[in-house]
Image (cartoon, rainbow, N blue to C red; front, side, top):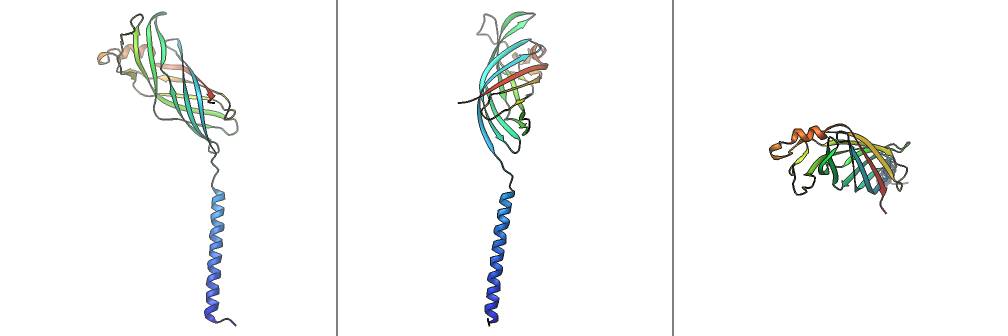
Length: 212
């Protein structure tokens, strides 16, 4: 027969072992229950084309984008960087000069991707900054100064279909351009620039090609 002391020691050891086994099993179950999070880090060369409705003028530029896609969560975020756009400025059908416009992102573009349809929707906020407005034949003159930009960030929603991580994507959408501020000495050209540029119905197309 075991002594009472030895019986107690065996019981304590058994209880400890049972507890350890239970904790191990619980930990394994918790690990298995963690949602899967597959992450794609993707780089794209970008060809962008915009049309400003009031100006009836299309402009193109290039750049690149780095995107992070959380596949199971269906979310994505992107850093979009575009070169400045150089566009003719017309008044009554007559070209009167050239404008250099920068797209200045405010944070990352964010959006979703549908796991079933692979539809991508994404919104980028950015200021439109008219860095230079020069009369035709007078490239050294900047009529609007250095601080002519939209009074608030432009919200640019785009959508398209993502077939796979290595396939090109085309995203397109419409956006509204807010009023401008800081144009000309003391803002004297704010109203004129706003009248010629701001408003709804503008379009953008982004063609994204995976980087080699």
